[in-house]
Image (cartoon, rainbow, N blue to C red):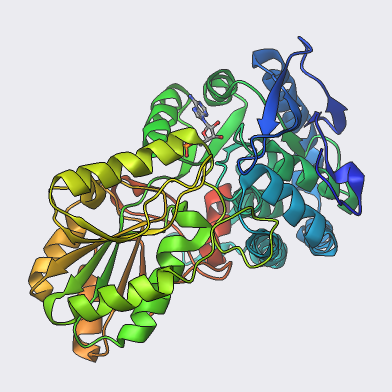
Length: 482
Ligand code: ADP
């Protein structure tokens, strides 16, 4: 049960295939729990290969009509969908807090953020331009048009159960593609609620399908399908690699948003109070469980102690608790495995000589208090692996060259952040950081208008911005004899 919904039918425990709400063929289900209380909220169908194939067939059947509609028609439906998401923001937020744990205000913020992608791409749908290209031949003309790729499979993670679908469905549907989507097992209800609203907005049956259940089986069918032309995935680098490998036989187009290991650098000319404010946002949003979360905080020697002291003061203001309670800034971690990982990183740092200035205590269940750790070195796990939890490790550095080397010494390249007021340094560092995103004097970088994506092993493609829709389009070259 999810309590206090104004529109109770947003809470669905069935999958959505070809415009119908359906159970697994086997009748099997899986429980979905609240990470704050471990209470069972409900079930989702445990589907496998047959249901996934049916969903792919439904998407393929819906494709010619959807792709053939005018961009304006598609845009009208997508705008209505975004409007419905905002009209039901409170309910969608409640569903998200129940299954994901993040504070209700943050969950409602995510719903608005998700809706902004649907709205943005509804607008972009009408600006998919081709080219006319000067021809080298007197008797032929060259023209390009852009067309939707076809059926798209989408696999999303649990940390942003609404926005990760919106960032994929917005551009895919705007371009004229149809979709089969799989939510994370921890958080299926946000995606299913969005499907309810998509249907109400007038999305034709089969354009957006949602299957739930066994991830490996569903992913296997998606990646081996000859019908699915593209896979878009947000999740761990490990699963991204696996899906890329599985997609090789059918030469699928891929968009991958994978892990990060974001450096957050504070130079000694930074405004320290602003840097602390930015670090709180970049580190502790969603309890440290985002792929753009600051993972390693590098502070220049001269301001190290001041920054540490001010960060501890700010962190001690953050209240941890059930996301439905007033004033809570940090909810539970998603599950026991996540708690274990943060503790492993913390224990390793302590064993190698780091000091805990605040937090890091277990508060029972999936809750832990936010930690600030100093005297961290590059040898510790926290410096190399994504912690994905409320642990801020501070590493001292001396020179600009040193910190750039340290920051780039990773296979990841999604987000990075730095604070400096020296304009020359700002340009130098921004250009040298090997990251797809650089936050300069800010800890908050995500918005529908900007291109989000990583370099190196953080992924392929960009989501959001005028570039985002290109990932769902093919260029066709028309060579026209006169
Ligand atoms: P996390 O460790 O954050 O849960 P994952 O990469 O495991 O990240 O999960 C992201 C998404 O990938 C989820 O929807 C999950 O169900 C899905 N997933 C996990 N394993 C597989 C797999 N073998 N094939 C396809 N999808 C998978």
